[in-house]
Length: 418
Image (cartoon, rainbow, N blue to C red; front, side, top):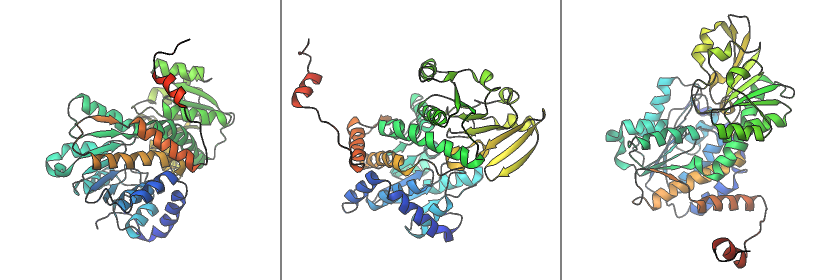
């Protein structure tokens, strides 16, 4: 067993957290129970690059219980829980290459430690592992069957790879499943992003003006939770349809150039770069708070922020205060990285239950049908989506109606009219 973690002595704390997550992830646990004896993933190596949290640990344990060999790295320098990584190594005997606070070189060293296992299937969050794999296919790609992608940013990168006819193995876009993006992105990020902001600052949201950049699934969830806390919400957008939705949902819609002078808190959630730049920062009020809920730390221009500043100071573990040349103070949470994982614990276990059930079933799909895929990006089937939703409802003790035979005919036949 190979590994690189921060401190093995933290394992007992990590195990308790994993046990807590397991008690709130009944769908994934039901899959673990279903496949632990038949082991359909036996003799397969799963190479993962995904936030090492207690929820991810439940996914890893489920894959391992189904027979897979595991090699795993973190997908963000500040998103690893070191006690979880320790438990996976000490208690489960797995190859984990992740610790909180790695530098850029260490981050990619961990990814390449995973690639050296020559995985059959990759599980990625942000596409860093998949992109590096594509650069080294001749060296590490002899076993590859397929891969999955967990997040919007990663799917965007891989669709660009596919468009340029450079995708070298099939990918299932787990992010695009309804039981992922309609729940994980909206409810998960909506709650956990604010959790990160509040933990880092203890700010009162009621009465504040929060600027949410981007009104996709993530931005929609953040805006709703901010509004629920009593904040006034301004949405910035480049997509006219999303902007119209935000307006119809009751929010103010403005360009960032106008919103920058009135916001108290800014949360970016676009998946794109340079959403907040120096021209915006110069207009901001004293003691403005900046946070990012997108995957990479490129949405807030850190170079512009540094260039506009005369000095900085750490207010706490997760907040760095920049003193601008104009005398105003700007407070940056978590180095502009994923606020919900840097300053909080990421999405609640209940919502990751569905996302990671999609991950497991996608891996199982590759294992059972490995010769049927082309080198392109595939969506989750509606059948799988509905099955996961049904299992989640059952775990919550909720029953729903079923269509009668007559209703089925009415929906699927064209003959019955007025």
